[in-house]
Image (cartoon, rainbow, N blue to C red):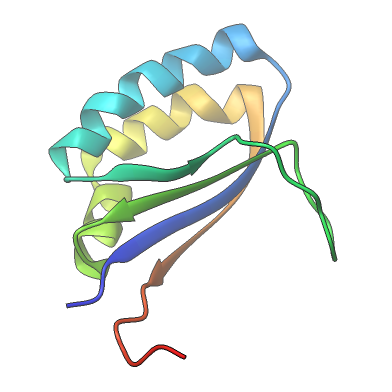
Length: 100
C-alpha cells in the first residue's frame, strides 16, 4: 500500500507564537504514525515560488494522512499556527509502482 504525505511550504513571521503549534504537533503526528522526511533543511528554489521552510511528513497511507489533517486535534492546532505563519499544504498519495 502506498504511503501518504503532507508536503508543505511555510513562512513563519512570529517564531515564538509558532512554537506552540510545533510543540502540540508532535503528539498529533505521533498518534497517526507520521514521521518527518524533510523538515526545514537547506534548499534551492530552482523554479517557481518558494517559502522560507519546507517539509514532507510521511504517513502509513493516504487515508491516515487525510485523517490526521481532518482530526479534531489538528484542526484545533491550526488555530495556533494561523496568526503566526502562511502555509501551502497538499496531501498526496505516494507512488508504489515500478521504478526506473
